[in-house]
Image (cartoon, rainbow, N blue to C red; front, side, top):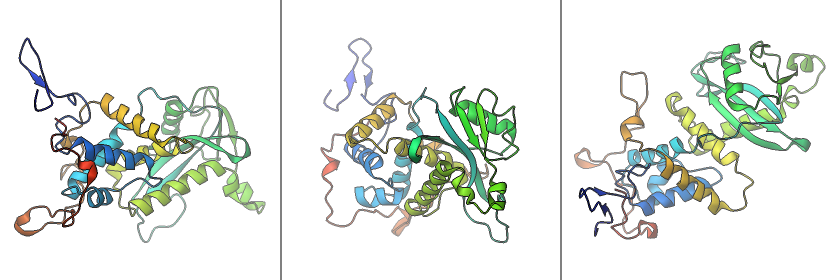
Length: 303
């Protein structure tokens, strides 16, 4: 049809090529979506919603945030392979800092995450998995390892009691004791160098790209985004990463905006308020006279 949709010759139903995909009912032109996908996959530090709204001429922060959040929803490939070989595993606290709390394992208003990364020869790191968990109990850690690590692999952890025999059942378990390393005068960070490096890179990314302003309710989606790029960091063909993201988006079911936000009173957060101009309407991030070649033909919109 002239509007870009297809019409069934039998029932007369009109359907868009984007129906049943992540792009279903999206009002933003597909050319803008593709530009965002390109920056999402090729930028080493990713792209924040504020940056996307400003650089791509998107009308409001909420729209840009919703677009970025939809991409984070689809980056986890169904049936992806588990980690294998020698895998380092540990827990870390990620999030804001609450004053008046001691260090160590004091949680405060942070979220606890489990981290696992393949450790190769010469300190080379392989793939990683990062998951938000409610606690560091044996049941939780065991479920994380079972979901992320191939049975029969070698698991290297610290001496935390959560890595009990039941949690590491089916794996070769190597324990490194950080307390003993401190007594010997050694650096405890050298015992699990892979996990420590991954956690450091992750926290640096959250602080640099997102200014640390990631709520606990949406943290897992941000972690999935970071893992998507980290596991593909050695790819020399960046275009294939863009292609893979489009594949995942087309193969994913529609993601309504209502499923992204968290309603007040439910204990979940909503995206930050948009800067507003006169009349209460969202102020545009598009500067006067700006041109955006990726906006393409006006009919190139998702239906």
